[in-house]
Length: 342
Ligand code: NAP
Ligand code: GDD
Image (cartoon, rainbow, N blue to C red; front, side, top):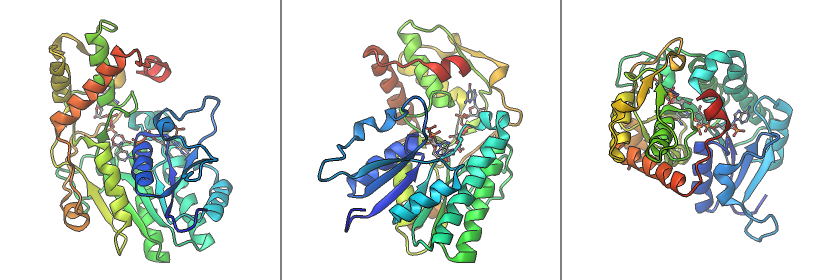
């Protein structure tokens, strides 16, 4: 461990949020340990640009193998690294997939959190912990949703996140651990996974404009979400761990829009009329839907001094522009998951 430097451990560093959080922490001088899963393809596209030579003097981004399903490895890593801060972002994060893999989703997103908490507790670490909870936990509780809103999960993913939320509260109250639950509403970026609706739309827009695709098939166009920009949200995670007391915080823009509105704006960005290209396909409907998420982040604004910087229109535009540029540069990686599962 580097002396004098703050040390953070991130699970889920290869994901959208993990990559932005790693950038954010490295820029602040942290030594960052990223937990990655062993796979037959080396899956680090989102953090490749952060590579540091292990022999360099200021080598501060270190990858280690691990998995939230593997308690002994988590304990071993924490015992060796003894991080000042732990950001638990690792998860099976796709709501629709959680209906297909409910048991696995619970193992990683729910019990995985217990494994982490038990390791910290049993090692007697003073690490501050950020737990990635989700607005999905509110289900169809009426909008706007805040920290005081009842949780009414409507998916295996949401139920697992709600379990994690309450385990974190339990370990905070029972053992005095510093744990902050971040209840984050949807946040997107050009690094968003291609089967989440925003990125699915912006990639299709770019490909349709370039003549590489002719239709976009979607499920429920009426669902409303509170969509923000991921880099704004990772700063909020960090702020939660810099407080004197651990607490739970909603991060959100306070504005909601429908999937239909997202389509309208995204296609309009390249002067196309979305109605000519978007088709409905039942396979993208969920067994139970969350109709309307819109967050009230007044507490985060007041206590953390946090507020989102990027507006909805700016978000749509920057995502479309990034995908158009990728297609033009031949970097359009229309590969496996999106083609096979859409
Ligand atoms: P993401 O892009 O899907 O990334 C998920 C990360 O978790 C990936 O690095 C993935 O590794 C890792 N992971 C999956 N299973 C794991 C396991 N068994 N052990 C260790 N790591 C594992 O998700 P995201 O959008 O960045 O979201 C980050 C976290 O915030 C997640 O917990 C998500 O549920 C939560 N969240 C996200 C949003 C949002 O709008 N983005 C909102 C609320 C909450 P691989 O790369 O190997 O798959
Ligand atoms: N993925 C997807 N694909 N969603 C579609 C589609 C489609 O073809 N058509 C319509 N939708 C609707 C979904 O039914 C949902 O109402 C909405 O678009 C958003 O879906 P996703 O982008 O998959 O995100 P999510 O809201 O289910 O979950 C995301 O946000 C949560 C926070 O509220 C994920 O990032 C979760 O990990 C996160 O916790």
